Image (cartoon, rainbow, N blue to C red; front, side, top):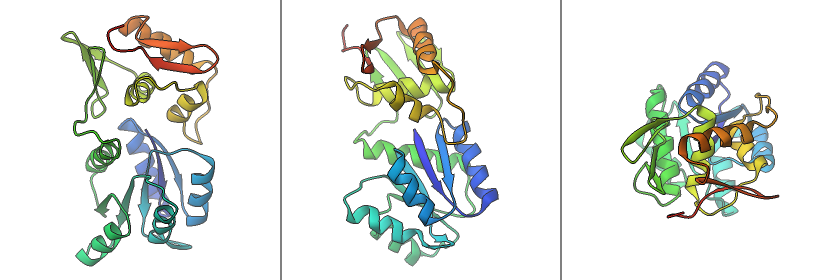
Amino acid sequence: MRILIVEDDEVLADGLSVGLRLSGFTADRVATLADARAALETSDFEGMVLDIMLPDGLGLDLLGELRARGSALPVLLLTARDQVRDRVRGLDAGADDYLGKPFDLDELAARLRAMLRRGEGRASGALHWNGLEIDPATHTGSRDGAALRFSRHEFAILHALMEHPGRVLSRAALEERLYGWQEEVESNTVEVHVHKLRAKLGRGFVETVRGLGYRVAAEGS
């Protein structure tokens, strides 16, 4: 799950980025509204953590722009303003959730997972497909009663494929899920991790669609 962090406090932004990566997210960060607009135009994100007070304006202005053009990007507002009227204003402007500073990183990660889950129309955090259950909160899975563990990148690929069964995801799309701007993309990394997933789940669980990418096999196959 790739998240954009818009926060001008460098120490806080760095802590958020590291903490969210430890929770399984791919996190990129910017410090201004201008940079956030550029990032949203050039990269695909599944959610955004948005500070209200920024050097070049209010995060609520960016939020308003997104909603005005019909974007449903899940947005969690992050701010030191913790009065009820500020929370109400942010939520009414189109925010999906709101968290006041200081906050706990585990709570932030849990709120992001819940926010993204609601955006996908799912009530449960776990994903199920072909007898496999995976839990985004713990990066673990189980199949036929047997516990399974995955590396961060293995889980990211599996999660992306199981979010929309039947949809083919290209190598480039999967790399977007695996790497932030500051991370070097390793050659053949998607192929390597798909190979490892097949070793754990069976060769038929993840299908290669020649020239297009990968998908999870149809249920029952």
